Image 1 (cartoon, rainbow, N blue to C red):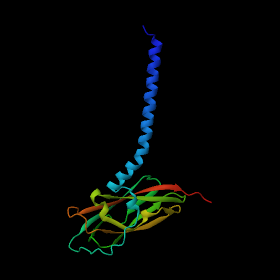
Image 2 (cartoon, helix red, strand yellow):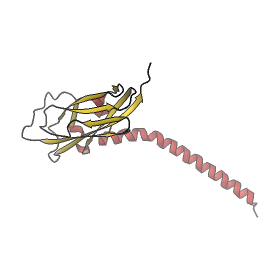
Image 3 (cartoon, one colour):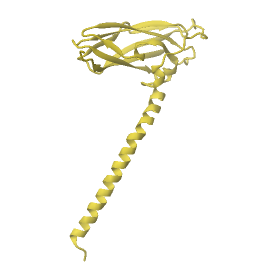
Image 4 (spheres, rainbow, N blue to C red):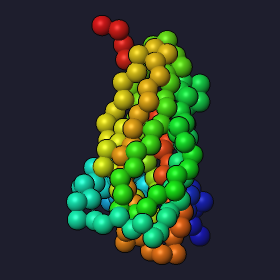
Length: 184
């Protein structure tokens, strides 16, 4: 007959080994998430490095005046009590290959100086590579004085190679407070 304490000791050791193994697996999964996130962002066009770089000027592109695409502009905020943020216009009819400019308005609602950053996204996901931003406030952090409002431009074009079945593209920005600037 075995002693009850001995079985309990084996069960405790088995549990400790399982917990250590689970911790190692979770730690490894945390490291694997970075490249998986990069792949996910590249596929969906959400906050990928390709969306943070300016597009080349559409020198070789010809404007397709026979086609129009509706571009919708949207905005969202992470911290509604710190900022006001919205597009100046919510929709444009554009010809692929032609440069257009639109503006977003952002206001620091606080009295303190702040830094904000915009993260772009394009929908549908299949249109991401065809929505080209030549100049964008999202490429750099934006510094705001207390209660300051800025009119921030986006210079863009829709690549004429956009599939014919996509008639509407949405360009959305989420605006985040990166940090509050301290007085020096």
